[in-house]
Length: 339
Ligand SMILES: O=C(O)c1ccc[n+]([C@@H]2O[C@H](COP(=O)([O-])O)[C@@H](O)[C@H]2O)c1
Ligand SMILES: Cc1cc2nc[nH]c2cc1C
Image (cartoon, rainbow, N blue to C red; front, side, top):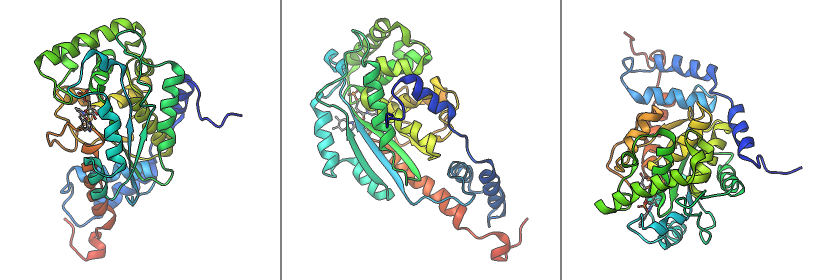
């Protein structure tokens, strides 16, 4: 028997469909505890709701956050041949070396948040196909990338951040949003690493051509992921799905991370219930994409780096929420009169 948990997109989808929801008893216990803590009701605002949400996914009414994991996936994109990025494709591999040597922003942010950080480079010497000419990946290729993500999640992790590095991937993400949510190509393109106004016009044309060359993608999340995504985008989706099956909460990062998530939600509604949006990126269409997913970002810092960086900062917010929820005294314990 094969050791692989899935070998087709249909099998992957079935695993996601079979995943359990949060633990109702843990949510109730956390709500009750929250009501007894030494503060006026609701005074910790969204931190209260975040701690209760983590309690549900961890199945623990007094949740802990001791082992956050950041996983960064890297992939190369055939569509860079169209001139859609301000940087050359070799930067993907160069940045992987930088991640491995500890020199990137996400290394510092992971360290600051006390998170384990892992990097997975996916066949950088074999970019995906240019999606203006046909599907970016075969089914075997997208399944291999989903498996890299699935297997990257540590069994001991109690929180997951999925990040990415891939020159050209804001064009891939914009194409995915156009396929899933429609509208005009111009609604979904942004400056990425810094293209000028002509670059924006080019990116819109390229994603229109991508949809024309891949007519089966509209409203089909996993087929869109195969035809318009990249290996790192699929790996993020695989890791998010694995976290869902393990009951590990996930912080979404920026534009590309959200595109990976949107493919899962489109394929299996409810499959992002274990995720929270870490931040809203300065990439123009990210706010709109989060709106579509009904996700209110925790932070808005003007960041547009990727790598998992916005979500990496947001780990500290979840830590704060859980420190209060699980560490505070109750009114009875502290001898404080309640209202
Ligand atoms: O996460 C974001 O919102 C984000 C916004 C703009 C750019 N990026 C990063 O920039 C790279 C893609 O930009 P581009 O211009 O090559 O498509 C890729 O490595 C992403 O991590 C990331
Ligand atoms: C230098 C550089 C670092 C990055 N990190 C994520 N995307 C990136 C794109 C560039 C160009």
